[in-house]
Image 1 (cartoon, rainbow, N blue to C red):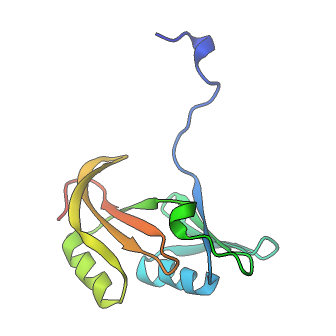
Image 2: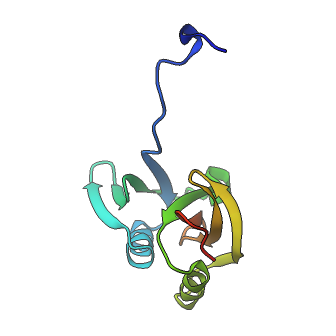
Image 3: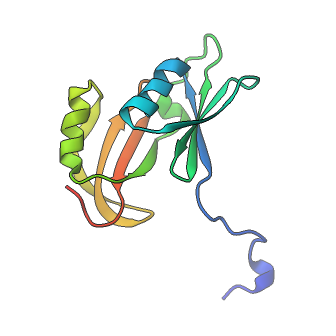
Length: 139
């Protein structure tokens, strides 16, 4: 067992925020607020940063520089949002009706709050967003 001197002098409590580099900040903001229901928390005009509230956490939208074309997969694999819903399959059908890219079907995956149903979608910039209901398994 490690001694107290071997332990780091900090404890990671939870995720604070994620910053996504986006092509069109207005389109991305509309996706996260209209489709996923996040609220606008803060706008830092000097930094060109839009912060959206996701529960206790933030998703920050920062525009790509002109001509910057890095693929989303080169920047990050995915962000998982813990959600509340009655039927993730019904959510998937609704998202498809909204024209949102849904990757595959609802499957079981493990996350920070245990095993449960999970679904991947894509935002307007191609970022993979995992939707994972918290609590009892949802299908």
